[in-house]
Length: 282
Ligand code: ADP
Ligand code: MG
Image (cartoon, rainbow, N blue to C red; front, side, top):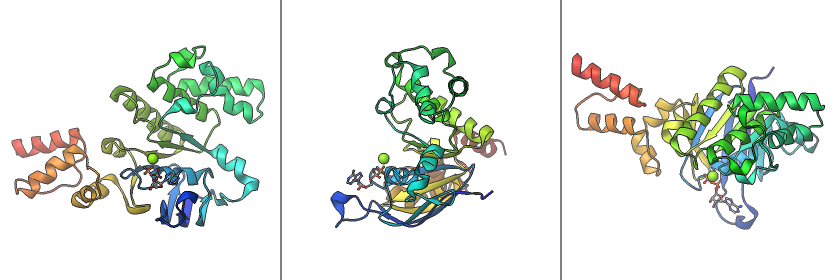
């Protein structure tokens, strides 16, 4: 089977209301493999959400082509297949919630696939278990916290058995604990079930979990690489209006002052502690 899951070739997207202005997505060429975990970072308005919507044909490119498993997103005969294989989770799951109870909500997708009742029940049970919400199946959705609602939204998508999940700032309204829980769920699904993950975030520390970071600016992918390679361009990233992880920033500044040699692999607090230990005890 082909390893490439998503491919964009010279993709441009212009919103109808702004046909004369700069495109929201501008000459993007990118390939994303099946099973990859990709984080997308970039300041507000850099095109991240537009990119996400081009993936499952909510939007169609105004130039170029988007391919999912080799199928063009403009191919209406395969629209359902594309929509089914790419699940989207947005910032505010309130807009995505349809039914009254947790289990009804999660069942909505598979019901639309026309699956037999038994299969639906099986999928709902597994999906709720995957996100740690199995004890809430009868709960009314409005009683859930924001974090719990996001987990239910993810379960609803898992019940469709997607090959890829796109999370568009899905954790940005959550408290730090729920945020890390949602991230662990997504990481586990990626590792254990091989689900391709596109994780859009404005938390640089979250982006560190990815195999690859795509850095967006003004509708273009300006950098693409491993977290350490993208975040080692500290000045470039900051000039483009974003931050690098705090520890990276600290070690970068210390190296600029001449205290230590710059080491791009220092990204997390743990990396920082280890590096300090080495300096202090060597
Ligand atoms: P991001 O998700 O990175 O904040 P978006 O993809 O939402 O960026 O937006 C990219 C550009 O497209 C911005 O200039 C934004 O103002 C514009 N844009 C987004 N949505 C619309 C829309 N529905 N109509 C017109 N312009 C839009
Ligand atoms: Mg956005």
